[in-house]
Image (cartoon, rainbow, N blue to C red; front, side, top):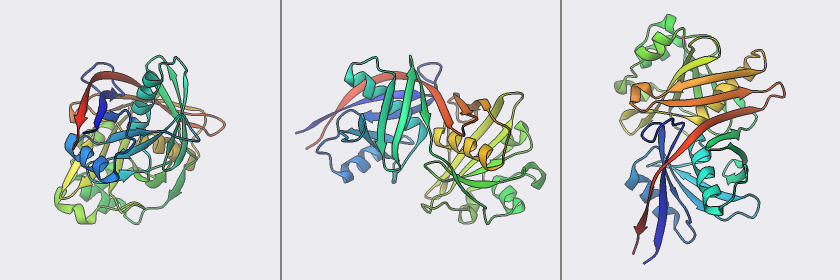
Length: 282
């Protein structure tokens, strides 16, 4: 019976039981794809990752939600990079991870990791502010300007709101799931944000799963897409933001976003390792 070792880490965390949890399988060689998907459902975290050898990068990483494989996601990238460095027994601050979207460079300063996202693709949504407000159970005036689909690795609807209060009041209506706009993978993913003062943002991320609306506590891919939104809407550069997310989900997360004058999008967060274990499969 093969044994597969895994680690539990929390990403964007200031303390062990904060941040966004992630399960990382240290060596998934020989593991069928169906087993990866089944293990992701078994752990039932927002994502579970599987480390494999790579001919072009430090390691290859596959990312699974409980229901499907993701081509890219932020907190799995940072958490997996942390585990890869631990497995290599190195103090090297630079890691390259091969994912479905390509090679993602990741760098560390201690336990704080930073990924460099891809150049964004954008498109206009078909949904109007009135319908979007109904889905989110907000007032039309709560919806800000320049709602956009943004894709720096995973396409999501980036929704500026008029105030932090609107971000906190949002209460997506699960009875309107059929009305939710869907991305290029036929998934519904919505990132709400508002400025919370100079250099600060408060945000929330929602996605649909079957007949439910789920809130993710800390979403690095959406933070990268916010950087893409900054570029697409010609915001003054550089941009440096402290992004707070997860309070409403009971898992405070702190993300860093930088958009450089050279149009690089950098997302950072601290990784805390919580524990480890072994799965034994027949």
